[in-house]
Length: 64
Ligand code: FES
Image (tube, rainbow, N blue to C red; front, side):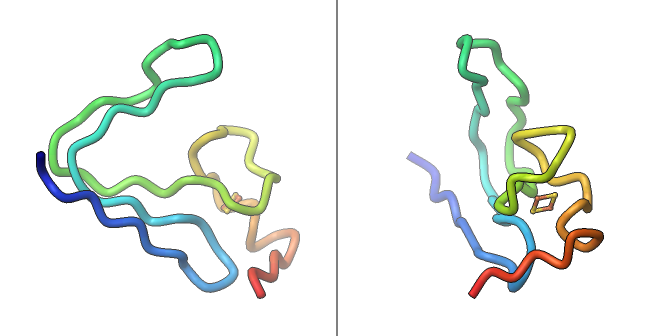
């Protein structure tokens, strides 16, 4: 199995790198691509969940 790296961006999203499939709560595939970088919302404010849409900057999300 290929390695997947998850990095917490300070005051921002999770940066996920690798080959993975993202599935929503209903089992629908949101994204499935090989060797790609994804940014997943960590602040809860994105209107494009599970992806980050930059809202964390507008709401001044603090990760610590
Ligand atoms: S972390 Fe970027 S919109 Fe939530």
